[in-house]
Length: 118
Image (cartoon, rainbow, N blue to C red):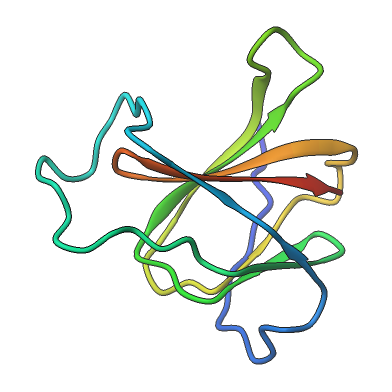
């Protein structure tokens, strides 16, 4: 039996912790796009802050969070993935994850990418 460890709640202090700077990638090749049309306004990357194994987001319209280990293969290997429901503003990673990763937040054909250390 496999256990899944995660939790979420509303954030009370967004600016606590270390800010993770995200690069926006438009036209990301998402195998499961969430919307078939072009958005009416440009996508804006959320502000993301990290404190230990907890991330806080400035906003969330619902996205897929991926941790990619860049040391595994040419493009890295996804070692953790979670669908974050809309309006969830904090996310707790399992304590068993440690090391340097690429954080990828995927929303439709957009991806927001940054570096994270757990």
